Length: 354
Image (cartoon, rainbow, N blue to C red; front, side):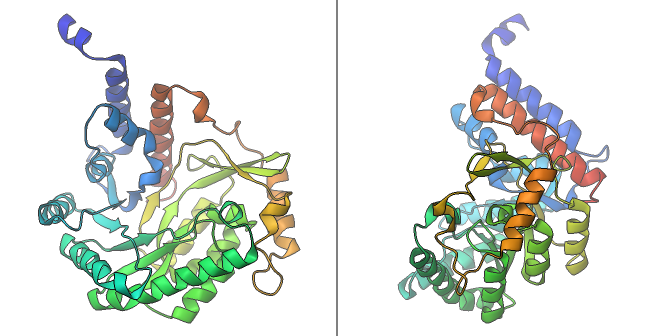
């Protein structure tokens, strides 16, 4: 035992302890899965990094299964028949549902490759696709014309993908990824009018675009087919406000009401946990750059929405200072990520009925 202890690094011991503690916290005594609660990869970067540091593959499907989750959002090696079979074998063996991401066609010549990826996903048994088509609007675009041009590109891309999705009867959920305000995305979905394209609803992203999460949900709910569940906290700073994911139950979102509303639309809608352990994001609403993509005629931002958001920042004080994991060691970052995930899953199962 002494020799074995010497051979195991401190990092390996910490990682093993973190995984064991987390798995005990996540699973019921009878080891039942939470069928509608899943994992999104953006919530597990430290775990993936630790695997790379140990020169080991990070099997995200297995990791989510070990955490007691019944849904996984991941990628599929659609060009590898063995990988496709193994993907299906895993999810069926563990009674899990899978959502995958694959690049959308940008022009007509990309459609055959896209169809091959969709066909492979169908063979792998996935239930649908996820796409995040923008970066943060206030960072990505330097003019209204640039925003408008890219929004039109996104619409053309999805229009090319839709007939393929319809052919294979698989749905695409487009995330509200800090690129469009809810009304803009909802108007697009209404114009497209396809049962095979909807919204992968993110609980907190549109706070960055000065929307109350309840309003974002009300507008996008008719099109929601899957979710990124998270809780949010805010703090003021010189150029606007800071926005941060926090463990479920620690933020200002009315999670119970939002979950109930979405389950009222679809009792089996997947809620993929996206508890991102990272430094707060700067939302610079007091700067000119933030406003260059908003226009009263094409893309309005009502003053009441800004006022409502700033009132949330003023009145919804965080329960504790926002986390800044960049100041921690890698081991401490991994422990913090594990703790945030464990707390979130416990809240989802105990208080949200997921």
